[in-house]
Amino acid sequence: MTDSPAPHTPGITALGTRLAELSRKHDGAVMALTGSVASGKTTLANKVAEFLAETHKVETVSTDGFLFPNDVLEERGLTLRKGFPETYNVAALGDAIEALASGAADFPGYSHVTYDIDPALTQSITQPDILILEGLGFQQLSPPPRTAREPDYLIYLDASEEHLLTWYLERFKRLWHAAKEDPASFYANFLHMSEPELVEFATSVWDRINLPNLRDHIAPLKDTADIVVLKDADHAIRITHDRIG
Image 1: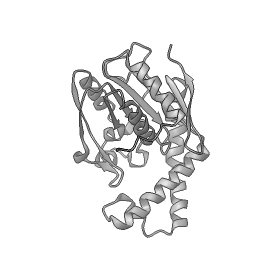
Image 2 (image 1 turned 30 degrees about the vertical axis):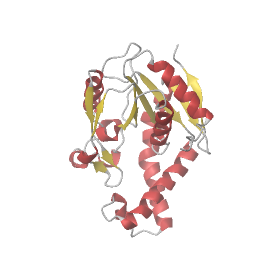
Image 3 (image 1 turned 90 degrees about the vertical axis):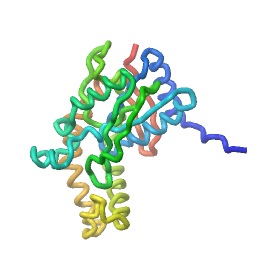
């Protein structure tokens, strides 16, 4: 006898049900999911995909693969702005969305261990019922009906800046600890630091890079997103805005 799957939380059920409803209007609906660094976009995408997979063919992919490689960012003087709009190959992202509508597309992959594009992580995706495309690099979407190079809907994952910093530091420390067993990890560059020094450094990165990016480029998308989901300190979510008629 197999174990029954764990029940989905009310927030995941509500969001998954809403996306299933919206997918009926599209062949191969593309749902963009964005929000701050460390807000939990990947986790949310995977949980919603798990819910939807009971009735739909679902794929999830990150926009991180559309970041320009580190050598390109360095050449353009953008290394310290990774994650800002100008560090994404927006044309390639549009190409992939458009190609998927015709049947299949390759989505490049990114390694958070090496902190760079990894060709081995490329995903070849055949048009599913629903694609959840999560990450950064999105722009404000056109009014419906949208172009073939845009997602069909934009979902914004909202959270307080205080919680986001807490989650960012937790993730930074987790990857730092893991680097002790993996010298190839980008985070091995920080193994000479004590944990208090690491936290001080990571906080400065947040304040200098991630927080300005959030305030100037990411958070404004909340005002026009089709759906806004709020995440609390306990990682529970709920839909706070649904602007789709």
